[in-house]
Image (cartoon, rainbow over all chains, first blue to last red; front, side, top):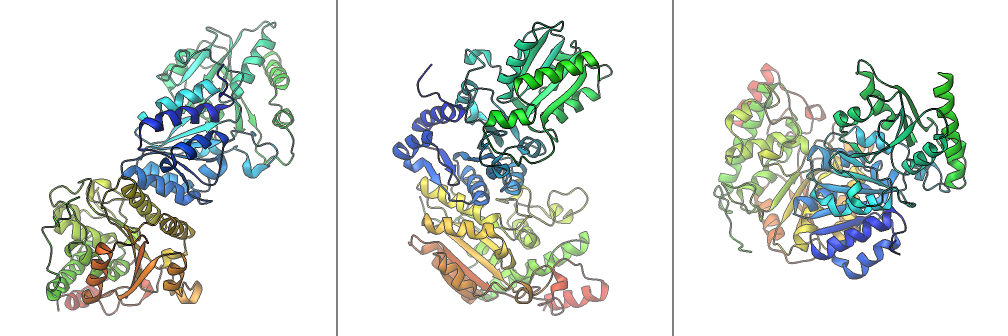
Amino acid sequence: MKRWIKGMRDAFFNNLFKAAKKDKDILLLTADTGAICHDQFKKELPQQYVNVGIAEQNMIGLAAGLVLAGKIVYVYGIIPFVTMRCYEQIRIDLCCMNLAVNIIGIGAGLDYSTLGATHHATEDIALMRALPQMTIYSPADSLTAGTLAKRNYEQTGPVYIRLDRTGLPLVYKSEKDIDFGKGFSVFGQDKDLYIIATGRMVYIALQVVKKMCFKSISAGVIDLFRIKPLNAGMLWDAIKKAKYIVALEEHFVNGGIGDMLAALLAIKKNHPRFKAMGIPDKFCSKYGTREYLLSLFELNVDSIAFNIENWVFNKN
Amino acid sequence: MEKKNFNELKIKSDNLIAFKKKARQIRRKVLDMAIGAGAGHIGPSFSCVEILVALYYGGFLRTKFKDYKWENRDRFILSKGHAALSLYAILADRGILTLSDLDCFASKGGRISCLPENSTCGIEAFTGSLGHGLSIGAGIAFGAKLNKKNILTAVLLGDGECHEGSVWEAAIFASQHRLGNLVAIIDHNGLSATGILKDYLDIEPLKDKWEAFGWDSIVVDGHSFGEILPALKAALQRRVNKPLVIIALTTKGKGVSFMENNPIWHYRVPKEKEIIIAKKELNK
């Protein structure tokens, strides 16, 4: 593995930097949120890197104006600040006007576990899902994140990418295994149970499935890396023969992929039984490692496996 | 870039009578549209007519008459989007909107409404919500500077709009990045939707505030072409790496006596007797 690939952020911005070296119209805007992987931008492409200051609303408006002036724009920040502080600007300046700005958020879920609820990304999927014209990517690993940076500026409308500071171990062996046409990947064909997960929960889901492989039920994982637009038809084809579907996300249960998948299934005449797992509807008031917080919300491997088996076999 | 004026509807700068005539014509059209639709912000639209007429007919927005999407055009953003009535009347005069568009203003499934939200109509940004336009304008100006293009971006804001924090975020940025190709024009009528600014959230001293944020400033009588035109000329010709604000002292509802300085005319359509008086006064 290349030494520079640490997390998703490094993978993404390393590839974006390569693209920006060839295309002077690519600009990276940040609202006073730094990263080591931005250093090469600042040093070698100073004309293409702009710290707009702690002013997220202005950052989005500027991004819209820069796209109107012919630039290709990426804005970066910690997820709650880059999605919520400037939500109206995203809604109107980007979505109503359908301008191709790439919003790169860092700190999915409880990634910033020691900084508290102000820095947790627990509602961002719900908010971005509500916006017409918005495309949402939630990569499962650094390879996916890096590939997005290579493909991303082909988009014609606004895009939100939910990055994690982690990204290893990798979920995919090769870029070719990531089907960007479909927007999701299936790990294990014709299974009784699928965990449809997003972000780093995909890796956790794969561990859960390994734990469950000794039981009488076969289980697989679907990596939903493009949350919007949802490829509803193909996703349904992939899961319709299963008996159980679990949605798993590091996000509030309100308005995330759980709600989205429930709506998808509810209109079908016959559908698998469904359970949504995520962060309960309350802000986290404890601090610690991410693993510690996830275990508090029963989103660690053992708790997830236990709860799924309980649900399946006790038929709650 | 060739600094040629392509605006075929240009009025000569010394022909103040023609400018005033055009302003009255635009006000009459605004009134007709609002009455026809039973909707519209007449007061706010009237207070900036002279500013808009000066911009569009004074040759300060260099563009191509037949190609309003020409990439090297100067840009205008109506950040106080609720003055859209006046802008539409001018865009129709320029042939970008049709008379049918004006007929269907805010009604009959038309493509224009009380707030500018349709980019096919010569509108550069969607500005129904206040506080957005200056950031977008700063982005365009910054992009033009990076691209080394001689493009002026003008943004018209309301004075109440200056309550929005986002306006000042854009102001700091514009000063930091020396956007001498950005002009903010403040339609300073002293009123907002609910009343008089001084009574509930005074923004004075406005000129001092903008200067403190690193902008050059000019204060003009917002209804005097004799003052607006030279200010806009200065904006176009200056070669200074500082953004410019033109603070235009205006009267909300200007042109119709019972509307002037009256907050209730922020969003209100006149009734029969009022229509008669208004039309009489605008036809003088």
